[in-house]
Image (cartoon, rainbow over all chains, first blue to last red; front, side, top):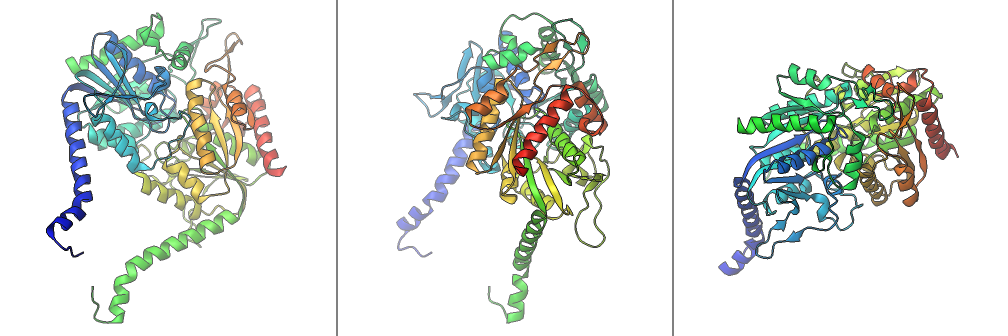
Length: 288
Length: 288
């Protein structure tokens, strides 16, 4: 294209410059935000439905309860559960003095952001191909006013596709927790998650076995709903830490639906004891 | 670019022509294959871990048992479970007289193809971005020697991303079954699947509620592991058929791990009775 003069030539280049400028601005915002967050925990699973979102919600709630400033970021574009688990129904607010989104303040130490909170109609399906998902994840890291945090817990969709890959590329110092249930079909999938962590060179905090064992509420006898011991065995075989086993508890299902994660209220019993131990195992690895 | 003569110009265009030719060839193969398959059932879920693969495996096994020529295609690139559920460990063979892949023959009426069967190392993570996944799904439809089938059951990953979208675009006459568990967190996700089906204009056969209720093996009392009734309520509210409720059975977990889907052997009980009813409800919609 031949331009009449320098000004017009400059004008025609503007859209391209604008995009590059926006990209550079976003990268700078991401860098700024991440510098104020001490520890980043990325909760992964190979298979869906192993309770990854429930583990993320309860992990963030427990860290906050222990006095750590904690953020929870849900980047599961297709099936965000975190909003429901914290009963977040309204859209996010924008900070008056900046262009940043305000995360939802759950209590003094806990803030939450879910992709769900950006949608007008919560039953709408997000039919997004890969590149659009990469964009929203970057926006969540850079455009949210996270502030100074001790821990950021990131809940990504299961698998080893665009979303987990984008999280690792955007937050290179995130450390992974791999959630599984005990049966072989699930374990086959977490071996893929472990291979993913190795391929992208993400440090792994360990394997957490969820829904391991259940106590019948009628006769108090033990039932292995999804078999038992597979998580520990797989962690050992792959040379990874085993963070612990969490039993199945119908109250976790109910509390997830009711909008208050189980670890946020006093519910003594095997679930709480097991979860506390797992969180201690995680904190130890950051604080030595 | 200026070419010395016509021949050279033609030569330089060849790579582009080759790609277009390959694309046209693949499209023709897909069309040929689909013309020989009478009914296509696409098993979807909004959320992972609701037993979608287990439902797909048992649905295909039941249709085959009833005498229908049935194919089962697993396109869950990141977490393929179907290979494990049918104990398929080796790679697929290539037909000697054509370039097509041979699906695994499970019994007289049932053939299976899983993305797992194309991998040398089964614990390898498939870190593929969207476009690569679209390619392999098209290849599964076009390059596999499915032959003449009454039913093709397609098991896709949960959510509403690249894979389900590609299935719908490649197999436009597929009819959807939406699998869920009864709790609200799962139901929120299937409302997204229903919205997805409406957006892409895919006809829906109905909603199937899985893991609905459990009988304690010790005291025989009933336990609602994931609450109850939510699937039926959601189907009704959205104006969809309710295909039925399938109870949780630890034998389904075990049989999935052992490589023989529960419906392939004689295991009388509530699971079998409920599953038979669901399959009858599905067949009725195709045969009127």
